[in-house]
Amino acid sequence: MSLIETLAERLDTAARTATATPQLTDPLSVEDAYAVQARSMALRYARGERRVGIKMGMTSRAKMVQMGVEDMLWGRLTDAMLVEDGGEIDFPAFVHPRVEPEIAFLLGAPLGEKVTPMAARAALAGVAPALEIIDSRYENFKFSLTDVIADNSSSSAFVTGAWADPATDLSNLGLILGFDGEARQVGSTAAILGDPIRSLIAAARLAARAGEPLQAGDVVMAGGATAAEALSPGQHVRLEVQHLGRAEFRVS
Ligand code: OOG
Ligand code: MG
Image 1 (tube, rainbow, N blue to C red):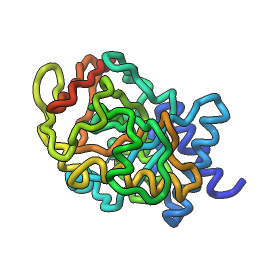
Image 2 (tube, rainbow, N blue to C red):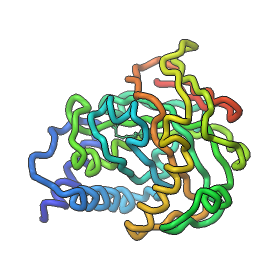
Image 3 (cartoon, rainbow, N blue to C red):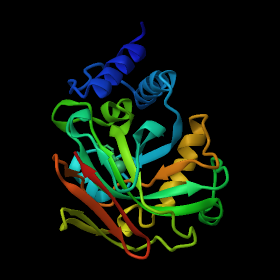
């Protein structure tokens, strides 16, 4: 078995069994790390999961500072990661889950490698407040850039609120992430590359270059607008985004 395959299986097993694994010791290029990610996703697809979109990461200063990773990255989302708005996540199914406030885009048309902000907006069918549940498979949630890319950029679950008018200006909307009615993070969508639409444009470019261009029906998660917060059983998590609405879930 090649190194890429061995690492993909190791990370897939860590995710499936909710067991932390040590950081990778083999020196990987960014390209190799994405090859590990693609291979680990192939294992999921072979078990019947379906790719439903992609998530962007490290698109805000707050996330870069919290994780010590400065480069934008991306990962694949599958139908098995989608949690219904108002639904529940099962705490024991995760290693050490955290939640972060995001914006989700729903595409109504494909997007190619080079798109203008106007073309990106025109391709949208909806925008929504969204919560990403990230769960690094590495011990202590510590990783290098290539470690986290290989680990599908910590993707584990996501919740999207009701889809709102895609013409909504997302450049500076206030947001509050709350646990049990108490604010934990307060921020603005402006933290996401100055305007989350830029994250969508980057997603279109990266997905096209990887040979899987964004399609109608795909969901794109723009990346955390604030630092992520650790989850514990029993919590009720709610995100409110100005003019857009809310998204929520419970941790069981
Ligand atoms: C890596 C994933 C980053 C985001 O929104 O920036 C990410 C991590 O922080 O574990 O999802
Ligand atoms: Mg995220």
